Image 1 (tube, one colour):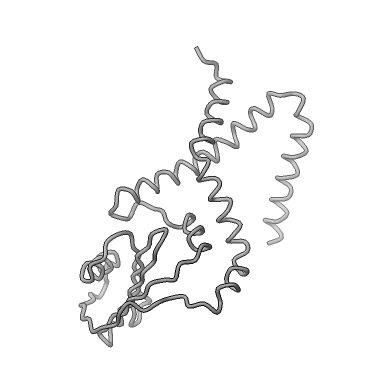
Image 2 (cartoon, helix red, strand yellow):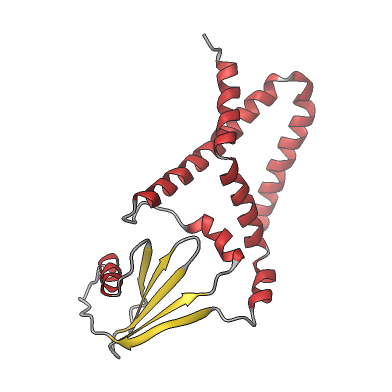
Length: 198
């Protein structure tokens, strides 16, 4: 019968191995978020969007529209599939973004003018990597999208497990308690100071 100490070590180890690429990409994309100004400066003179088309389009918008349904209708009318988000600024424009890790296309519907424009976003490696942080949720129709959302949930759960199991394993090793206490206390103090100061 496996002991609970070995079980904790195995869970700590195998969760890390299972999710190793997820942790790496969160580290890389988090770094890009912190240094976004550098990447924006590099891309500032490059085009951001390429026009796909602009044409007349008449879509009846109800008084209290369901934006998921409106977005799906716009995409269906133009032969687009996949994950998307739809927003209405409350005035005269509805935006629908289709997105994947590799490509983003947006549709802009101008209600008063009864016209629609579609644009493809120029590929940027920094945007590709930061999409790992915000492409999630279970609201999309695709099973693979739900699978991705589940993996993100597992990563979040595993981070908590890693912290708790790591603290447990550290405390079991008496020779590391002193310096471990210094490291833990320093981290907590730094977090609290920054949290209060900001």
